[in-house]
Image (cartoon, rainbow, N blue to C red):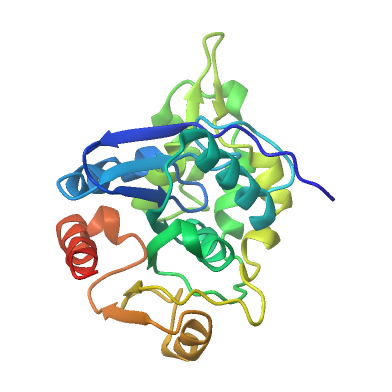
Length: 263
């Protein structure tokens, strides 16, 4: 089935006279979550961060699959005329970045993948989606009330704050989700799918940044990474969790910059 791409919205964080760096966010994230890290990279790059379909300010559309997101990114790249770029992806965005690198290698100067591997991974967001779908949007008076509603299902304060970045206040009262929650819920299994097929490879330089305190990537994934990305530099940073671009921003941007300066 032919997929009709949507017109992605993106943020341009600056650095226009420098080589392009495209940042792809993770599930339930957006370009806004990358503002701090992106601005830390503009000394070296022209940083662009699209909102993927069903996220941020980009259109809602079905299905939510890597094939659909790939079609969107191809159309966005053609529209912006960005040409060959450094590609950086986190979690779901990392899977999409791997897919694009393997299928459009002439468009990818180098690849940085943050805390995700190229294989299938069973989604672990059931609690988050259950809490979001149960939130009584029409009855909410404040974000604090929304957080209180979610606390039973989501005990982590940081995770609740992250999820609530997707909540918009409506002019007529109440709130709505900025994300396309019904489609993301329905297609959650698809986000866990392997983004690349057997035999697909990217021969260029690749940096995998893995959180030592995260369980998204383990040593058992390393052979699979090297099978698809023979030049992969796999670095496990022991004190990192799943979101180093937020929690370890300075160290994260330094490692990305050092990797690219050696290209």
